[in-house]
Amino acid sequence: ENAVSIGNPEWDPVPVVRQILHDAKSDAKDAPSSRFVTRIIPIQATCYTSEEEIEIASRMLIQKYFPASAKTFSIALKRRLSAGQLKKEKIIDIVAGEVGKVAPNIKVNLKNPEVTVLVEICKTLCGISVI
Image 1 (cartoon, one colour):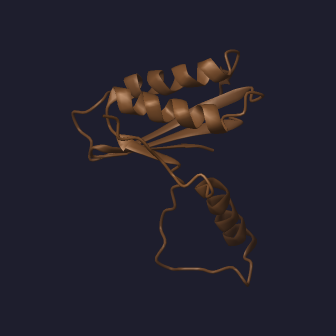
Image 2 (cartoon, helix red, strand yellow):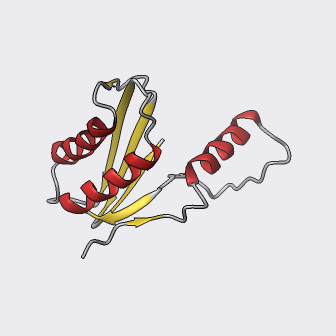
């Protein structure tokens, strides 16, 4: 059985993280702050680190959040404590294949993409977002 989890459909973490970053950049006086926050990663779906699970999770997210009008994209892949698991190239091929189904004429742009598919792997868990 698949173990793909898409977050609460009423709450999307991407706009929240964008607002937090905007507040921090603008030095907003009324924005909450914390000296203990070092990294914020907006994860929209989680799954186990397997080809099948990553394909299912990325398909669901890309179909829901990827704008078909986008002309460029990139895939940002971060792996932590995941030695001996899936190869980086295989993960990128899986996710890029799903992007190609939604936007067949899209081009890769690593420096200034319109859309980024974020893939975060830590041990046996994988988090994916469309930013």
